[in-house]
Length: 197
Image (cartoon, rainbow, N blue to C red; front, side, top):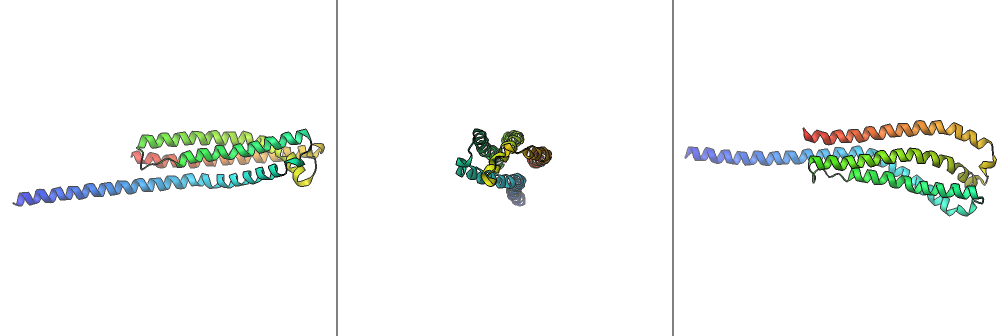
């Protein structure tokens, strides 16, 4: 009888330990998901703000497009509007892919593959943003000069000085943002890799 009681207690204790292990694993996965999302949100929040700025500029250009009177201002306005539409779409799509990684529903390998796909998209979006941002900087000055100031800046010699002054700052800022985003993405990757341990 005593042996049966011991077996019963042992089985009961095993069930409790298994239940506790499942709860512990579930909590670890939930905390990992939360930490992962927090890291990605550090990228998402500035990108969302940038999206709103791009959208506001796009609306402003479209609503005042008729004020662009010369062919080169129309071309600059069209290119500006197109870039202002493309830039946020690339970034938002990449970040959405990274945010869609569901650690609880996927196994470790699937989570890393989904994350890797999002990181690749983010890397492409950031490199594209660097190139398209440089082009946007070039074409938006004349457009905003005409829409806000009513002046054709191509007829002003001083506009080229603005480009010379602004481009080094743009380059430094874009490089800083790229490094910061990649650090946050790498931190998120480390959070995922901790699950393997």
